[in-house]
Amino acid sequence: MIKAVRGTRDLLPPDTELWNFVERKVREVFARYNYHEIRTPVFESTELFARGVGEETDIVSKEMFTWEDGERFSKAKLREAWLRENKDRVFIDEMDQVLVAGFAPIDLAVYPTDGSRVDRPLIELISLRPQATEADVSALIDASKRLVTERGGMLALKAPLLRIVTPAGARSVNSTEVEITQLAGHFFESVQPLTLRPENTAGVVRAYIEHEMGRSGLLQKLYYIGPQFRRERPQKGRYRQFYQIGAEVIGPPSAGSELPIRDAEVLDMLIALLHAVGLTGWTLYLNSVGCVHCRPAYNQALREALAGVKDQMCGDCQRRAETNPLRVLDCKVPADQPIIEKLPKIADYLDEGCREHFAQVRAMLDTLEVPYQVNERMVRGLDYYTRTTFEFTHGELGSQSAVLGGGRYDGLSEQIGGPKAPGIGFAIGEDRLVLALQAQQQQALAPLKAFIIPLGTGMNRHALKLARQLRAERVTVDVSDEGFRLKKSFETAEKLGATFAILVGGNEVEADAFAVKRLKSGEQTTVSRAELLEYLEG
Ligand code: ATP
Ligand code: MG
Image 1 (cartoon, helix red, strand yellow):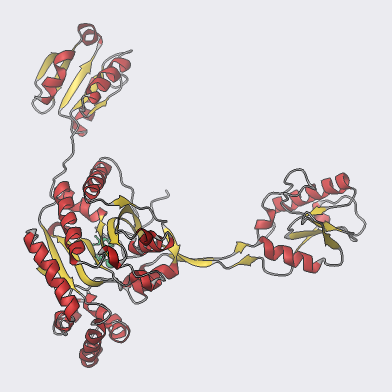
Image 2 (cartoon, rainbow, N blue to C red):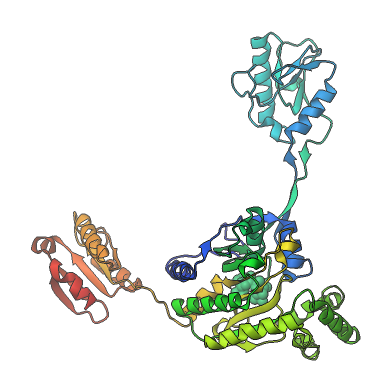
């Protein structure tokens, strides 16, 4: 049996109802804050993440699905090589068509062709393969035979990859006599390293730069919902394909993109969303990680403090202590924690601007009565963060307790080659949000109200008609099948969690009144079609 790959999973009904419910609420709430959806590709140049997220982060150094998308066929290279090899025997006409001037021994090259010399493609895509297959060989031979007869030996050639070398003077050939040679040279060019996106902020900022979205001079408020990919050890709440709901507010400084009000508004929107989906019991942790001006001094202090203790720390920390000491604070190895506790605190190194910015964000949150805790160790796992960073955790999630994380990234655009475009955003782990909602059993979903059971031949259409009528009144119903025995239909109704079963048999249709059974109590009543809605809702 072929199974879903480790770390990936199928989302099935009824869980998908909850996913859709969450996504509906996201669209509703974010729209009220004037956010608009952006969809970026699922894979990007590896360089985007290396430069954006940072080489030293866990994500980039260990968790990315990256591949070399090389070996792409290059027609131009092939043509050049072919011409080089055949320069005495070819000329190029004004149509840019390569013509063979003569050949001995019969030395055929056959190609996909779109030229006027040949009416239709003779061999499609043959030049796109590095090796010829048996099928290619016969196709080549067929085509060569046809060409020889149709053109009396004059061949219209375009971009050949393979040559069929046949015995000298032969007019027809069969596969055993044919030798296929590849042109000398490499016709496949290495293109670029690509990566399945491990997060979406870098992609959004790339799109912002590419489409010059800053030119309007306005703030761009963008949100996305989509899969992300990280090669991590799979466990509950941690998958290799997972889903994030994220939002970014980004723009030129003249649009106010750097101002603390943006940070407060983003957090306010998050709280509105968590409220709308019914998540309770979360904790918001807040910190400021400084900026390019004050971070170097803090990094220096960390390096100095780490110099004496790093030998007692894990391998990753020993390396980070040199390359990116801030990342040490992110370490999850238990034995390292007491050492990390004693390291210098970033709050003591913030410059005036960062301190003031953070104070204003906090003052606004206080006014909005947003509860939060400052956590000075929370630096987040991505290098692009500056100033405000935050994380929401939820007690029901066990060790994968972070439901969402985010922060400000004032230098990210410039880091990946764009204009100055400060911004702030977050990413919610949708898988974890759904898990938390399930755990607290707040499935704010319409449960199945009734299971309609057609009884006897010819009753399916009557059942469907009744179902349509109820659904039009926004009642959630499902329909059985007249081929089911009554007992099986009742069992199914119970498994589906329906409140009522409605029987649609010949007598019922005639009387236009239906036997309605309340599944929990077993109580059964006959209700006319006209009164049915009221009865079910009552
Ligand atoms: P963690 O510390 O749990 O690994 P993170 O700091 O790597 O999280 P971020 O990069 O900040 O996570 O991503 C934002 C959110 O995306 C996280 O808070 C989490 O809810 C979710 N998330 C991250 N990685 C995964 C994963 N592998 N599977 C499911 N959800 C994930
Ligand atoms: Mg992680």
